[in-house]
Image 1 (cartoon, rainbow, N blue to C red):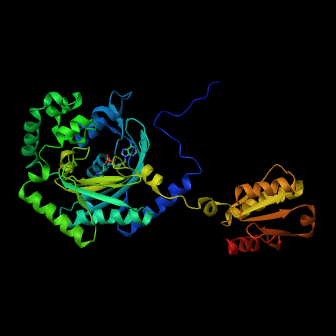
Image 2 (tube, rainbow, N blue to C red):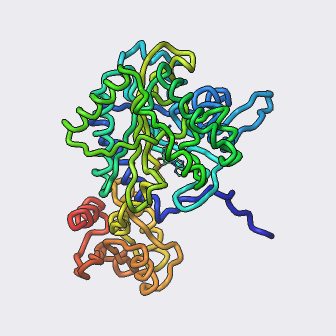
Image 3 (cartoon, rainbow, N blue to C red):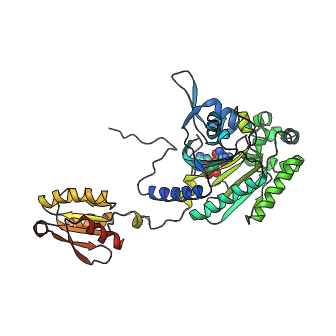
Length: 421
Ligand code: HAM
């Protein structure tokens, strides 16, 4: 029969790769714990309206990339393309703001966007998402960004480039929008079809167009930091000051607009040379109107999401096999020894030892081969003689030394394994 493969842009993360993901996630959880960021777990499926309103109808994500379907209940549902809107929905739905004026939340999980798959871009990808809610002070912007830089370094990333911009607020952005529209109106014909439409629906999105001729045109357009209002300007100046105090180098990128409409004021992205400038490893920003827009009180927020897949691809390979290998292989020869090894394996595992055996009762040579293949640190060899005498040799697979152990004394087997791991 013909085999069934995975869906384009959806991939399997195989057992060889998962230890790396687990280790990174461990580091992340540790850092978040130290910084007082609590975990929230949210559904993968939401009402489509949430993303339309949250991310913005005239964005690429909502216009072209969402996995949306009409549910049997005649309701439009969407596989979440990002986590922020969902986190805010939960924040409002459960009145989290009543419990604490400042909430620091993280969530890790898969997101879905129907983009064109390529290196570092998938249709199901994973994000590590953080939101700080309830604090407007520019110090929190700097604190969040500095925590993010620290986190990426802890994970082992170097060569990071932080770019920041201010996107203004709903008071100053309309004037800027008009400036850009006026500027582009003269060259409307030269814009791509998408951008001609964007000129009416969402002209700021033209800054993100990948089309070279649109890029050339937009490169001469007015830029947002020149038009932001005095309070936004002051906020941005302070963010820059605090970043400098925290020793975080940054580059100003006045054309960075981010792909989601909820952003206000501070926006940022981090790229590394290994991924190329196109592929940010993380991006985020402030979204002071979003909680209200989704039906909650007037509470400001700022957050980021790290592309987990991209992060993993940038971490140098370490000796993962060594760290994850089983502790002991029990080479059991003969029926009696096989039976004994079966329960010994079980007992050792319950004592915290990773034990393996081979049910095939093959020759010692092939069982030793299997032990080597699994990269076990120790092998215990039990045959008929050992069953009768009650002692067996345990071999250290690194240096070949052997030690005699009482096969009925699980504690001493465990000890001799753990002492040399
Ligand atoms: P975003 O810039 O759309 O922001 O995505 C954040 C990160 O997710 C990107 O920098 C990238 O590393 C990764 N990413 C996005 N799309 C893909 C893809 N198709 N394949 C692989 N990785 C991808 C957000 O999603 C915002 N919700 C971030 C945020 C949180 N802003 C405030 N709070």
